[in-house]
Length: 393
Image 1 (cartoon, rainbow, N blue to C red):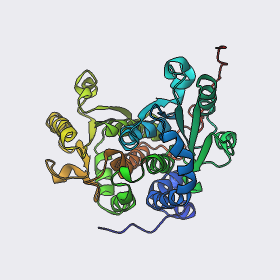
Image 2 (cartoon, rainbow, N blue to C red):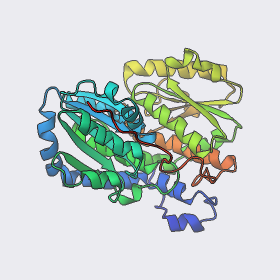
Image 3 (cartoon, rainbow, N blue to C red):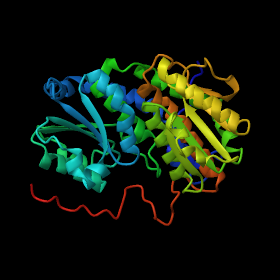
């Protein structure tokens, strides 16, 4: 397996002529992920005893409901992790966006008497909905504990829950609080934190993620990404099943964000795409199919890959997969070392492919990926949200 390229600091990125102006933060934050994941694993090992002391009484509850929540990219973290954590814990696990909890709390928390662990993903911890969701849960639920996974020790969410008996604040490495516009290393460190904290050894493949990501970054996938984005596609489709369907959603969002909307993107499940969204296709569409490691689910991903390959010009359709069987080598971006991984673990190195596509497409459009919205119409931490008081119960 190839070794990773030397670690790049933000200072190196700023002065490196190979890193385009306006991309230094995003470039560094994509490439630092293998190192930060190793750091995150060490943090979980060091906190295992205190974390288990907090979680064990909750997980012993047969009626426990685990709610994974966040907004935007943070919501996708919960969706990617959901099924793996349900299998690992043997408890009901749902993924609900903080935006849904805030806007329609009654529908999200219908069973007010059910013991609940609210797992909040938050890069800054200062988004209005992140704060509102934990407050709403406390108001509506008879018994609610909180696992806050955040990149910002000084954020409002961490401050609100630090020191509470019913809360545990799990911090990711400080460098994971991305300074670029889009969430890259913040997403993956928080996702890894949830999978390790709640899933532990029951989630297959987590130990192999850093090496798999390092291999992607130092291998020929970077050249293949450049080739795909250089074909002039003005719209992208990301497809996948299960946890990789959620990864497809995050991938489409990343492209939309980093290109400032200049490249249109769409995501769907491998089966769902045919039910109307397929109308999105034109001759200038590129398609990325995430291929599941599950033998049964994989069949549907391979089917849609073949169908899209026949429908679009050569080179416009690629697969991201951990196993090469059933796929053409020249159109497969292989994630080495992850053939036995759960799809939620595979998503960690696989998302780097989407991040690199978004970075390259942004630069090709003449957009600065560190700040694709210089006029402030879209912001790194959401603005303009009014949180309305809940009606009395």
